[in-house]
Image 1 (cartoon, rainbow, N blue to C red):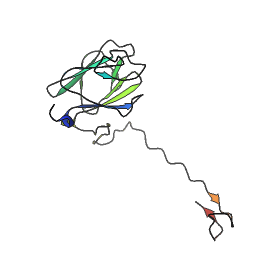
Image 2: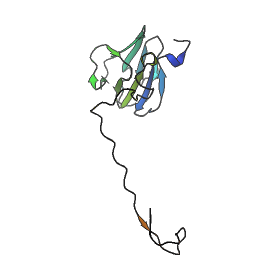
Image 3: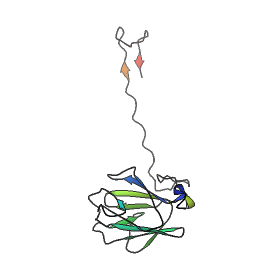
Image 4: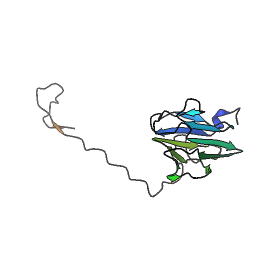
Length: 151
């Protein structure tokens, strides 16, 4: 898989100061934190210098919190021991949210959108604001020949 980086698991920063950044996960363990000496540096003041470690063993990716001050959360559950990651998992560290994408087990796309049926707990879309009607004044630039209401 190392010879085909597009098949390596991917972490995408979905929220936080580095939103949009992506990190491929090689076989060797990766430490995530704000210290410049770690493997994956995330510029977030709410992260510990060495916040979390993530690694792959075979086809399985796992992570463990490294005693961080603010904790590590996977799918809104606080990590207190080694956690096995699944495609689509949401990892929250400090003020950042990372999405785990595993192309070998893909149920989601790289930004975390699910290919499965929508879950019931999702909020419905909000309606777009109504358009404001502006009266047309004859003789003004852009005015139509017919007096009426422009939308």
